[in-house]
Length: 226
Ligand code: NI
Ligand code: MN
Image (cartoon, rainbow, N blue to C red; front, side):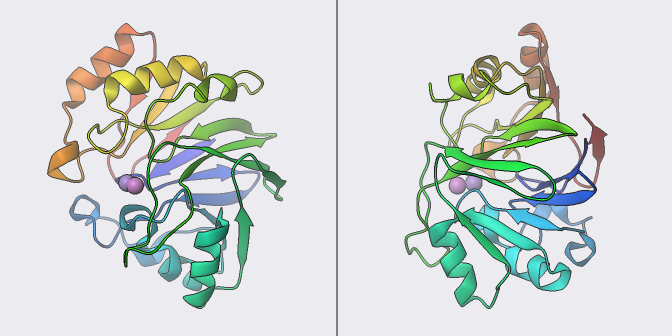
């Protein structure tokens, strides 16, 4: 599965001939200046929660590409009011078979509100299973024992885990999360974008290595084949 990173928690995965984009936050991101938001391809946009740093460019990209946006019920209703109509609502514990694979919306321990402060449902993460392989994206979350069952029945090719600390898991908790979901290949997300979440790359990679995991820290615009 080919993964392209767009900075912060934005990345896309090629699955079953489709491009699935997660949490696009490009235009406000100083570290993603090299990315042309109007050139990002997407067939689907999956959104974990309503915070600005995950939802900023959803409407813009969806309008240009015609991508279907998949998120929780409250976010889908909000996007409807922004003029989008290719939408798929989900809620925690539910899964749906799309043409590229199956998506399950799972728990995250965090908060979720829209940029105007209104209620955006509860935050989540996604498990994607497909003939090309399976992966887990944690969204913004604390380390939680719920992760233990994620890797119980699903063999993950990689997991995208937040590692920036302060608002989410830091490196040490992300390593524990990787253990809980039985995954060795980790895409690091939600780091460096703001002063509160700046991390030491060398130390982070070393800590994952010592835990027999590989942490991938991609530059915005870079791709990796998992
Ligand atoms: Ni958040
Ligand atoms: Mn966030």
